Amino acid sequence: MKANVYDNGQIPDMDQRTKTIGRKARVAWYVPAALILLSIIPLTSGAFRLVELAKGAEITAANARFFASPLPVILHIVGACVYALLGALQFASRFWRKGTSWHRIVGRLVVPCGLAVGLSGLWMTIFYHLPANDGDLLYVLRLIFGSGMVISIILGYFAIRRRDIIQHRAWMTRGYAIGLGAGTQVLTLMVGELIAGKPSVFSRALLMGAAWVINLAVAEWSIRRRPVAPIRREASIVSNPQ
Image (cartoon, rainbow, N blue to C red):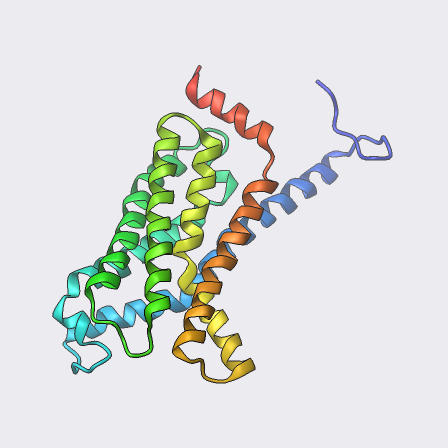
C-alpha cells in the first residue's frame, strides 16, 4: 500500500492527515447547509400558506384558488418541505459512502415527495386560475421546468434500479436543482427589482426563468466536476456485494 505524500515528497504526519480529513468533512457540509438556507424563504412562505388554509383566513383574489382546491397546494408545500430539507442532506457524501443505509432509506421518501412537488405544481399551473401578475411566458416555463423535474426524478429512479449510480446522481441533482428554483427566484426577483424597479409581467417571467436556468447550470457544473472512477467502483460494490 502506497503512502500518501505531498508534492515535496514528504509523508504527512498523523496530525496533518487529521486536519485534512476534518477540513474535507467541513467542506462536505457546506453544500447541504447552503441548499437548506436557500430554501428557507419559500418554505417559510409555504408554511404561512398552510396556516392560512387551516385557520380559514379571509378569502381574497390572491388566495381564492387555494381555498377552492386546497389539496394540490397542501401536497406541494408539504412535499417541498421534505424534498428540500432531506434532499439537501443527500448531497452530504458521508451519507452515501462507506455503505451507509441513510441515502437509500431517505431516498425512498425523497423520491415520492419530489414527484408530489412536481406533479402538484403542474396541476396548479394547468387548472388554477392564472394570477394577475403571471402571464403566458411564465405559464409555459412552469410547464417546461415542472415536467423536467418529474422526468429527472423518474430517470434517476430507474437509473439506480439498474445500478447506474453515475446517471442516478446526475438526474437526481438536476431534479433537485429545478425543485429548488423557488429559492433562487427570491434572489433573482430581488436583484431585478433593485436594478430596474418593479418587474412587469414579462420581466418577472424572465427573472423566474433565469433562476431555474442558474440552478441547472450549477447542477451541470457539479455533475461534470465529480470524479468518475470512484463512483464506478462504488457501483461495482453495490451490484456485487460481498
